[in-house]
Amino acid sequence: MDYQNRADRARREKVIKRGAEISSRLQAIGNIQKRTKNKDLFQDQRDKMRKELLEARKEL
Image (cartoon, rainbow, N blue to C red; front, side, top):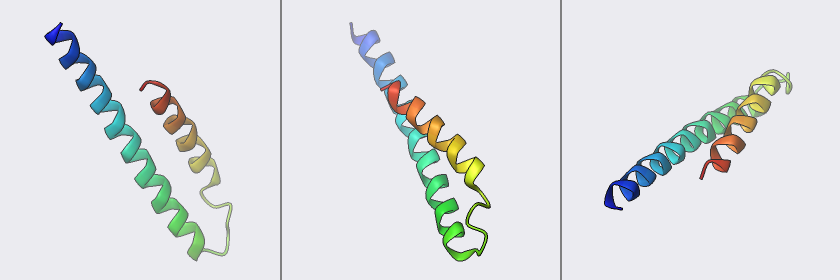
């Protein structure tokens, strides 16, 4: 059982770390978008990252 718990915890931590990375990238892109005149500049990348973030959260 202990091995299973460790494996679950490691997987969960990996997913949380990935989610935090994606969230920080989304925030950085959002900050850049605020300062640019072309608001749709990174919209494709943001949409793609949002989907990745949702998938990562589903794994929890």
